[in-house]
Length: 358
Length: 260
Ligand SMILES: Cc1ncc(C[n+]2csc(CCOP(=O)(O)OP(=O)(O)O)c2C)c(N)n1
Ligand code: SF4
Ligand SMILES: [Mg+2]
Image 1 (cartoon, each protein chain N blue to C red):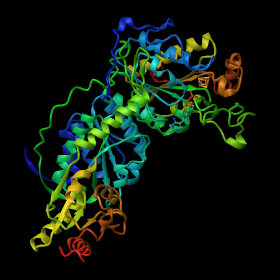
Image 2: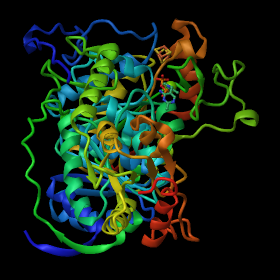
Image 3: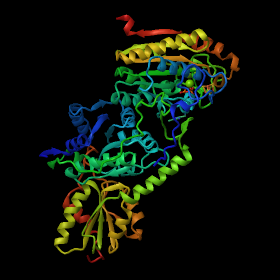
Image 4: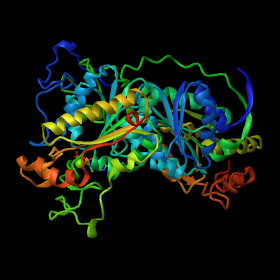
């Protein structure tokens, strides 16, 4: 497949279509609107449906309906827009509907929302965060695959910088394992056959064909989440084997840290980078191993301190963990501010080195 | 990770003797004198009569009618409160040849989900929404909704809704009928046999509009809620016609096929 020069929004749209996306509904909000615009044009040409939803709540519930029929479906927004969708995202986790959500965040403020959610119940959502546009093309395909494989919602968490940066992208699709047919899909063919289905978070089934009911169903889900947490964590560890100063960063911010860590390594500093690629499940054990030689662990994220909670859970001695990121925006509150600059990142890392001698 | 239970062959299913094989049980868990089971039965009968068996999907809202989802041999989803028309939109866009309907109470449709039903109607989605209107949140114990009519008893005000205190009810069918893209709107009631017969005729026409893809359709069915109205079971039908029925009237509000 060809290489093209495109931005992150277009890469996500193309990857979604390559993954077999059939339905998208969205409501405009910067910086996620570009994705909606991409799909408005491209998805119908690929035989799918793109609806300009009147509210985010309607958009996400339309996507739920489409996904419930066994078709790949998604929605997307930013910050408050995804906040409005929380009830439905948790509902999809609880009735095992493979909904995909594109969160194109401002800075990195949507970490809590993407990994904890604001919905209800014992709901979990897979979340992946690419560091750049080519990886967004790859991980978009993976979130669709994992959503179907585990029948649960999956979020691709990016930001405005990634969505609007143009780079050269190889559009060769991933080869992913084949998945079983969706015999759970609710499509109307069961009506009147004695084998009709009820798609519901309580999973009680029909009187002639009872489901497990809430106690068993929600316990089954907990087992499923535990399994996903075991087998699906993804991460990248760079120079961590002997790192005395370990930096943890995700998404676009990690791309900048990667550059600075490379530069400092060349100068002989024992600095390393641990980058979680799945934010849920968070690669806790891998981070614990990566931090084995660390005398200090710096968390560089563009928010007031969200991922740092997961880092403290993962690193055995949480007293080593320090926040070195922070809020970083421009006057509009929409774009990434001064912190995302290699010399600034380097200065933040250097504050950790006093007394460490790395 | 769900272990599928053993599915009995279709002919071993014990059906209800009430006119439709889509009911799987002779009982219902709703209150004595509740109007919902009657309205549901009418809708299921029409699905069968129009040969929509094997190609129909229902999206239920939150309310007492949802307590019967396990007893209907229909592919169903219990949607989030108020959102059924949006969920039904997603289903219909993926499966344009299916009959897709919502089943919502007045609290679900007119209070929590007003935006959903209006936007779906204006988008001219080829679905049918059913409103089972009893003028209360029956499920939560009879509280006032955005559709409770003036003078109607609710748990919120046992002396009856007063405009000075609570404002006015939203006439949802009138609102929906006023929108372009809406093909069929009617209001019926299940207070007596004639009412039920009329309701069935309206339900049938709504599905016919949907299957001919002429536009969005809505049938409002007034249903008794003696529990929520704090009335005697036997007084339900009369109380309903004195309040909801009298203030809103029964009949067709829009029929684009007849007009053309
Ligand atoms: C988000 C949310 N809020 C509140 C409820 C509680 N609740 C359950 S059913 C219902 C309304 C029922 O009223 P209506 O739609 O008129 O149906 P009825 O029971 O009268 O048939 C409410 C408020 C809920 N399920 N979800
Ligand atoms: S509370 Fe009202 S609507 Fe609910 S089952 Fe009882 S009578 Fe029916
Ligand atoms: Mg009601």
